Length: 246
Image (cartoon, rainbow, N blue to C red; front, side, top):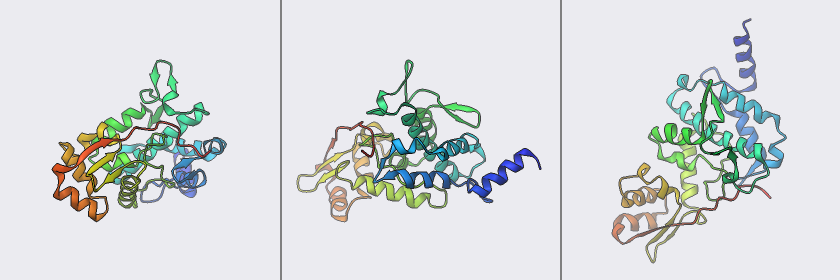
């Protein structure tokens, strides 16, 4: 048996790949062990050798051979997994922004290897994911910080991707610590994510607010749509402290 076929068989038996496509079962098992309510037990995770196995799975994948949904799930998981790796490599840290690679920030360093090509976190976010015409990725990728969306305690999979993205978006937008809507005074105090990436949600602030409204309770959604000119948008301060279980 050729080495390639032997490796493929081993990965199949481990649940790393399936006959019809890719699966991220290893990552789900890891996340369910170490993630609670979006917070991560980095200290315990650092001892888990399965995490390195999963990173190798990602590195050995050719994304061009995946279906559209598989590719989207792949890059979301890759961003989240290698963000965790950056934290573990420099743990303990108070914030991901404290990590530096010489003169480069953690966002700009090409420390991610996928199919023999180097990427940075910014490459994955801005050059790949944001070009896939799916704004809900902003509620799926997690930058290891308190104000980020909660890290889902399961990997994104192609066959559940739509439900996962929808659930993550609703969870994020209805979390008052991250987005708060004052119906009486018509004030939307929302995440800086909508300021940084406003063009991903529409051409204007009103478009952004209309996009958000689709995921909110009916009374707030209807008021925003009927009285959009009366609503004021404010942005919450972003908490870059580590999303760590303490």
